[in-house]
Image 1 (cartoon, rainbow, N blue to C red):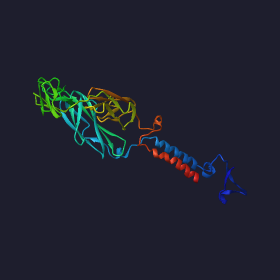
Image 2: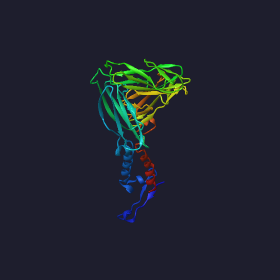
Image 3: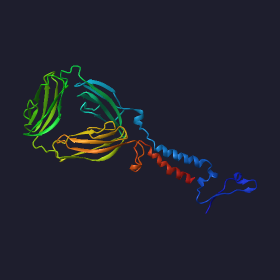
Length: 359
C-alpha cells in the first residue's frame, strides 16, 4: 500500500494536469525529498554531529572555572631541612597528597590537610603533589611542586634525624628495635640519646631497643648530640599481639582514566591483627600515583602501572595492575565513558526521530 499526500491547489496543478505524489511503503514520508527537500539531510547531519560531540571529552565546570593551585611550583632545599607547601582549593571537595619518592622527600599533613611539611632526606628530585576532587565530581585536579634536594652547605654537621617506624605496636613483655638515621651521611658526630615518655609503659635502651612493660601508649624519642635534633615514635603496648599473615586487595587488575581516580582497598589478615598499617607505592608515579589511603590517580595514559600495598608488620605485599586510559569512549568496556562526557545527548536521537515521525 502506498501512502499518498496532496499539497495545496497552487502547488498541485502543473498547467492543466493534477500532480499527485506518492511514496512506496519502504520510503517514509519524512524521507521524501519532495516534501522535505534538504531538511532530511540537515537532520541527518545534526544527528551525526551530536553523536560525534558525545565522543569528545568535555571538562567539568569545576575544571573550567577554578583550578587547584599550590603556593609554590618548585623548591630547592638541603638534606635534613623542612619546609611547607600549602594548597589553594577552588571549592569544597576532597584533598590528598603524594610524594613520588619517599626516600628523597616525604610529607606530613596538617590537621586540615591543606598544608604539608616536606622533609628532605637525601639528594635527588621528588614531586610533591596535591590531588583535589570537587564535591559531586569524579574528575581530579592535580598540582605539583618539584623539590630538588641538594647537599648540605656544612656536610660535617648534623641537619636532622629520622626514626623508623614512626608508629608501631608491640606485645607486653616483648621487644623491638627502632632505627634512627642521622642526616647528612657525612656528619661527623652521629651520637644519639634515646628517651621514653613513660617507662611504666615502654622502656628503650641506648641502642634503640624498645620493650613493652604494660598496656598503654608511650612516645620514644631519639635526640642527636650535635644540634639537639629529635624524632619520635608512638608506641602502643598490647596484652597479646596478633601478627599479620597476609594481605589482599579489592582488585588484582583494573583501569583508571587520566585525571580520574580508582579506590583500592587493602584487606589485612587476620582481621584482628594488631598492626594493620600498610604502605602504598606505585611502580611509575608519572603515569599513576597512589595516596596512603589507596586512592589511585591517573596522571598520564599509555602504560600499565603496578600499585602495591605493603604491610608494616611482616612486609607482606599485594599488587594491582592498573591500566591508565584516556578520558574517551571505551567500547572495550561496554561503551563506558567518564561522567564528564555529554552522554545524555545520545538520548536526543530517539526523541528527535519520534518527533519527525509525528510530523
